[in-house]
Image 1 (tube, one colour):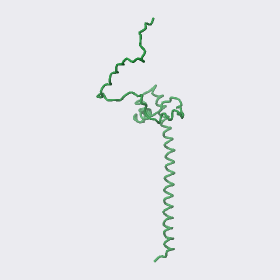
Image 2 (cartoon, rainbow, N blue to C red; image 1 turned 180 degrees about the vertical axis):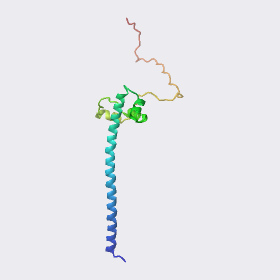
Image 3 (tube, helix red, strand yellow; image 1 turned 90 degrees about the vertical axis):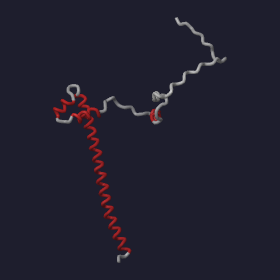
Image 4 (tube, rainbow, N blue to C red; image 1 turned 135 degrees about the vertical axis):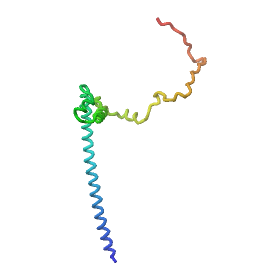
Length: 142
């Protein structure tokens, strides 16, 4: 039978081997994820450039013609063209005052989205005469 010291040494040895495997796996996953992020960013840049070139080329040829010339699927060309972000100039960063407004949610002044089956609004009530109300007199404008 193993002694307490021998059992402890065996457990530590097993844990050390397991920890080394776990560390190696985590490092490999981290390195590959980093590499993937770099490649994805590069791909996004290339697709953006493709979209811009396709937009410029659309002035002289259509997608089908370009697909025939390049052997690139028209569906891919169309996807890159429609995914491009139009160059509208630099976007303004929100200021502290507008940033708070954007987080408040929709304004209550927006048009009603009530369904057509909603009851019509009540007609305005007729004003009753009040001693404090000024009398309105029509005036002709020349």
